[in-house]
Image 1 (spheres, helix red, strand yellow):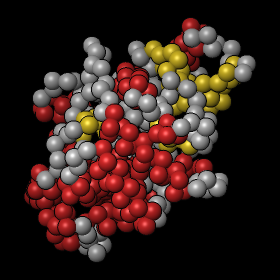
Image 2 (cartoon, rainbow, N blue to C red; image 1 turned 60 degrees about the vertical axis):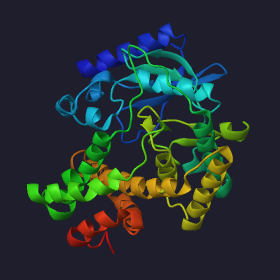
Image 3 (cartoon, rainbow, N blue to C red; image 1 turned 135 degrees about the vertical axis):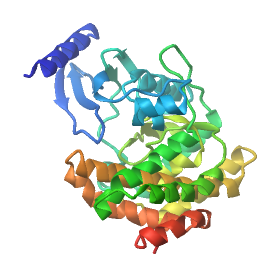
Length: 363
């Protein structure tokens, strides 16, 4: 082993020993686009997951009181208000979700400084696997919507501490994410970045769209889709959906997580199913009390375009910078989402820009 890898292995062994799992059998799990990795552990009849989140593998998270200039100096994680290397974000949000009655992993042990956590293992029934294996797609998506409605009703509060405080999904974070389109997707498609006047035109086109968003009001998990949801039919109600990968959660607009679920970058969600789930969410939200459905649907349209612009940039970056060519095969699906997003009335100011510079995305 290289010295750094050897040191990390020693830290892992020490953490497991201190947690009582030093003699557990370990099986690596397939990774994703993040810097975290996971192992499935078995110790006698007990099982758990080891989360390995090296603190030095990502840029700094956003300090609670950081100015825009300070966030820019710290890098993308601070601009977009991602958790970065702060494991306290995962453990704090997990506890808040569990207290509210949702199925987030139980935390058995954690060492945030070292970047390790021992968490509950939900098994293998990811939505993305369970549905192709025969689970009823409509039932699973209905359960995922039920969990979102429960989240809205419970309105969980994530306790602030010296190590972590929940932030808002502010305008700076939204703009940092759509900037990924011009930083990575534009060069991927056209061979170079746009000039400064075109970049200014791009952000000017986004401005009236983002101005129309509702104010941040509740916990948004940010990556609520079939690769991060588990089907747990042995549980009841909203707890039937197991939720992971929520450490980047912020206080934002409720429509964001429904967008993540229904405009999935990695699997096709039938349009009639997606439309039915939007109706289901709106019906459930009306039952909870006063609900601005027109505002919610406007937010859904805006955040769908914002999220897909970000994903186009991220996937292009993964292909070009990180040498992960498999993400290129996902781009056509996200482009199709974005094309439908731009056709919605709330996106009219943005559609004109794309009609001029990416006509295939505005078709």
